[in-house]
Image (cartoon, rainbow, N blue to C red; front, side):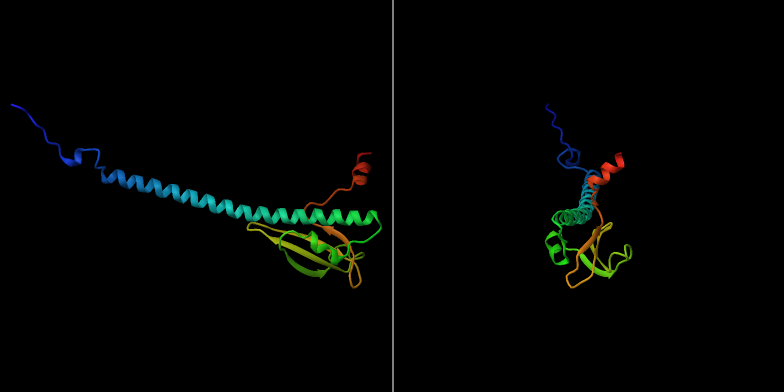
Length: 152
């Protein structure tokens, strides 16, 4: 006599249990949530990084242009600075807060990041096309003569 055994279908591995499917669903959901949150944080950090980079590049470019103009005894004028502005900052014109004995008004360029705002203050002289007297903001340059005198 031969014995043939019949196994119930739920005993086979081809039919996973409902408990295994639920655990797999939660694991996949957790991975998707973590990746989504990570990608969102990365994108927000990149917005802030670009705002900071644009402010730094603009500040350094304006200070370099001002130094180049001073070497040939010319002034950097407000009409000349548009080509040095990187990105699209918000511009506000205010009375000069510091250096009031030298400057009449100030233009503040602000780049808005997600976590922080980055600004540059451009102090202007008098006249129709005023000269840029002082640029204050991120990326301030240190003059070589200042470094030499401080090291002596």
